[in-house]
Image (cartoon, rainbow, N blue to C red; front, side, top):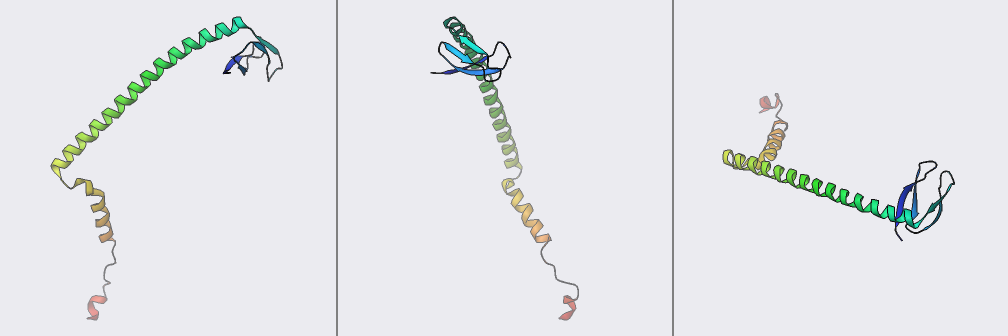
Length: 117
């Protein structure tokens, strides 16, 4: 059996019940709630339309996500193309910068060591 979520008519708290006709007790106010076959049919119709709305929302969000990913990929490829034209070794830029920094901070000979020879 599938569980559904309804609101208690007395305290307006949400409660989970099985999808079958029975009497249920609200966990917060201890009120007995009768889930009849009429209420079950209404609940199924409401859930059907909620599912349709949720499907449209999911389709819209998927389109937006795919569009943003495609746009980002296009911008990256455009940037890569221009950088490759200007400098074929542009992808090693960070490695070159790290190497230059390493060379600058390398231990330099001290001033008085020049005069020892």
